[in-house]
Length: 580
Image (cartoon, rainbow, N blue to C red; front, side, top):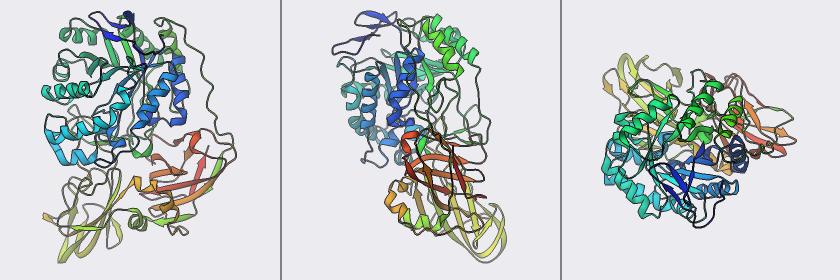
């Protein structure tokens, strides 16, 4: 491939892509910088090159970088990643959103925005677009200064994301395209949508390159695209070579030979391709999203697992799979140069470690110490009203009396719920007499990232009902997961030996690691919750599977003593943890 240099021109023509006037085919792979530990970016990018790719594609999750309005958290990470892309000798395609899907919490949109605008999100409405403008003003300089015509790796930038699967507000798309141009984006813009007429009609823009997403039957997909765009490059912007998993479901696997044959079909059509995912990585920090079942994506709630392995050719730990070698063989027939050798593999843990988490603090006390302010509302507020993105909320309310036992229900609750009546764990819907004290814990299992339920609120969205009567005067306190970023506050908590019943709470222990390396954390007998190693949140664990361990990147570990925290939100039958 041509090395990035100042003044390089990447253009879209009637027949394809050109780089300084010479035809070029993009052989790209998706790799999300936010799902890979920064110290491992270089290795993963090297693996993409070794597979035969010349380009990498990444999304940008707005909610990760702006957790509170106007308070930013390292949007410069995108710039550092693009610098690593250039150093690896790759080109880049950037998909900044504002919506990204990506099986990511809320599709990348901040909870504070979707909670405020409701059904106006992803439209021309000013209440939605003004925060988008402010965010792009902060983010896009990371892209603009690294465009190909300035010596950087960025070839193209996406307008929105699969918008035709959601809406048809062409004015909104035009506003975004203008915003990108006004912000200094000079490289070609593009859209990506499913290969269906209504999706391409709703999601594409005149004068902007349209691409399609699919996992098979390239001929049919490109025929549909050609009905809408008779000329221009053909590109599959997401060639789905695997799939993601939900908690409680089976892991989906795609035959490597079938995936390779379908990849060859894409390339034989003369198209460019972006393998989704080339390397999936991990949704660290509890950022995994959720979906709804059904053709209309409005059915039962499904929470996505922490691992984003995706059955990709490069697995969650960065290792080549059979699919990797099959794809490498296919791509070699279409690349201009042979692929380089594999980079040196990252070190792996050679000495397993185990511990007993023998210190504990009840969930009530953890929430009181690290949570937000305790407040009383006339109604049961949502997570959005309490400014809680990922985490838990404790609701307390009284059932007045005297009154006979009547069903106590929580309409609209779709996440993990634990209810206590007079301090005794009780099933939702059970008959509860009055007077009684009720405590309800709601743990967010991720916000929907795709479909018409995008942006739906979390928590007790339908109130608390005793038979048909709402209970009012609700005292609440929220516990955000990012409260655990304050490691000094966590270590200062008054831990004590755990009780015999394995109650919910924060458990603490240490793991002795002589030589750090990539590892897996296993928590046999634990219910559901989150785990941290040395203050780094590995994500959610859950005994329902299919994921049975959490990936621990080697750079997270240190020689000697390593701190382990486990926030159990259900109940544990064990105090053991194993690093293997």
